[in-house]
Length: 467
Image 1 (spheres, rainbow, N blue to C red):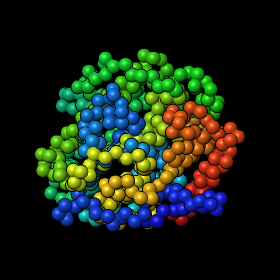
Image 2: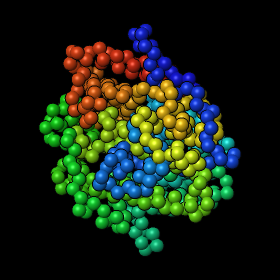
Image 3: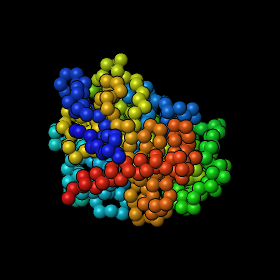
């Protein structure tokens, strides 16, 4: 797939929407000609740093850490849209929200896009496809049956009574996943396992729920308060950014020191619960003698504010909201090729062509992401140098419609509903994005440059829509 290009001021050609060229035919490490099993695990609201391997010294995620240590860890992974509905639609279809046009409050995701989704194409190619957990996308009648041989959709509450015992939803999802693995062991399969955790139960006072076996975790820990949680930082924000749903939910979770400690520990326990289910899944693969031919991809549908900037939630384009964990573990590759960490920027829309590439299936020309398998060989040539980010939902006035662009040093942010409000951060020097440089005269050309990039990308994404 050839990257889309845009000419900036007739001087420079910048690769915008896709990654590198010409990798679709590279070897996918099929040892004996058999197709690998693929398990794609997706959490909900897990920020990139809610992971021990990312440098978090408090959170207990030994099995996620092992997966990263034994596989490829993409430390600069992002979602193109930070909300579950649009992000999951992008993961299924390999398309930006601006193209597929699906989020909360819109009609169902169009059939044409779902007929090029990874589960549809894998099933058509002979894979047994399964889904367990939170689907999170509205589709038309009959689409689910065309995607999956087996689907078990689960919903809140997190804790429920089964056979007289309290069981957590993450463990229920794990049980269903293991059942699918065991029933599919004699053929190639792709399982999409989508957890609700660690998403808060927004309707409950407690917000976060975990199984009793993790009551002991974090009891003696003191969770550090983020630098930008200082009230003075929030008070200095423009009024438009003070009055968002992020602030409303901050009052639910983090508005006192005691509540902050309680809620973050609950959030961490929910991540740790997923980690324990990951261990059970890997054990089941070993017991069924298919671990050596099963690729595991692990990520999250969006990031999450844990009090940073005086916020809770996601939706906006700051790092905590858009950056997620992403791990690819492939036991078929040589040991010397495993255990690598990469700094390149990758996107949730890259997961879709990666899954197809693993299965030896041609990637549809419509896809806007790139396969990540070239990272097996080291840093790819001509990988993207920047990423486009957006949030388009219109049904809640407390969630701004926002767009932006991030490269290895700069992040530009604009708002549809507040055209005069722009942000520009040098995130390499200003890690927490605290100093908005957009209105300083010496950065005017840079603001114009990034605005031009965004305008060009938006035009292209709109033109890529199904007519």
